[in-house]
Image (cartoon, rainbow, N blue to C red; front, side, top):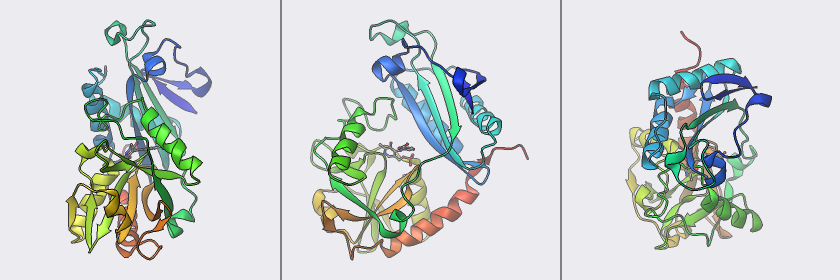
Length: 291
Ligand code: PXG
């Protein structure tokens, strides 16, 4: 496998970063997870744009333009003959001292990995996921804003540990007000009386690219979509529930805290959106190979 490392495509064995990199020492950096479908990088510009916004939010200047970053992603895919898979883009603060000061880090490190993605077991797309709500509160927006896709994912990891220890694969995180924020690595939607509802990002969610796409697909299909503050009550009384994310795509949730959602099967709107999403990804990517 070839890895893009600060300007060069190097062999996996040579793709090494310093133990003094603040990405490692302090989780100081940002990242993106992007998918490639059918020889196209899905919503590449949107992902790259979010990467630059995350970087700006932590006062990290990426030494490359957004256009150059898009080209570097395509180059890395081509070097690995990738037409279907997962791209991880990482920008760290770079090498610094054994002190927090980010201004002593001269050069951010840019890493692009183009590889395969691990999916939830396929049968879960038929049966739906079981989830729990967890005690780990989503980061407060005035501490670490969840809109920043930073290398510091400990908040999500702690929530994921609770999920796995409860015997399920994913969890729903609440904010400090007890409002629904998102899953540990996905955004959440509920369907109530035919209307699709998702928490506004200020409740503690990432402005998910899949979330945006699904909101557009649903609106175009004539479904009413609203951003709405949700409480656990709204989860327990939902007709349907699903999660969206680059890794998960669109996946139904059929149980929350061992309570059945709807009739316990993926809902009609969810199944319809899954099909529409499959079509959407064919049309909305940047070609990896030059035409
Ligand atoms: N919330 C959080 C906290 C995320 O990390 C999403 C929502 C969905 O955002 P997108 O833009 O992907 O629709 C994410 C994204 C992984 C993995 O390896 C996780 C994500 C994306 C890709 C891979 O678990 N999470």
